[in-house]
Amino acid sequence: MIKGLSWLGIRTERYEDLVSFLNEGMGLPIDHDEADFTAFKLPDGSTVEVFGPTDQDHRHFSTGPVAGFLVEDIEQARERLEAAGAEFIGPVHRGEETGQAWSHFRAPDGNVYELTYVPS
Image (cartoon, rainbow, N blue to C red):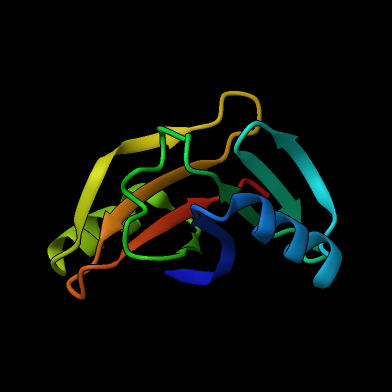
């Protein structure tokens, strides 16, 4: 079911410090940058996204960084995790242009995670 890690989302009050650290300190190249949102694309194709304090769409990232698990079939993976006790936060979201899909959930440990589908 799980193919690997494909995404990491971080909501932080120290947005500019973290973006600078990831870019300058760790050498991650910026792929997209706007107010309180920066995305970094890693060489393996995975993504790290940083959300600042004014970002309204990721308020549910309240337990720390959110890891995205890459799956082949997001609907099937979601059903399986719901049966295992995961509580999903909203519907499956789909990128109209990219075909990507993602769905956030709270696992039994109370932390938020994500299922991610990326078309081949």
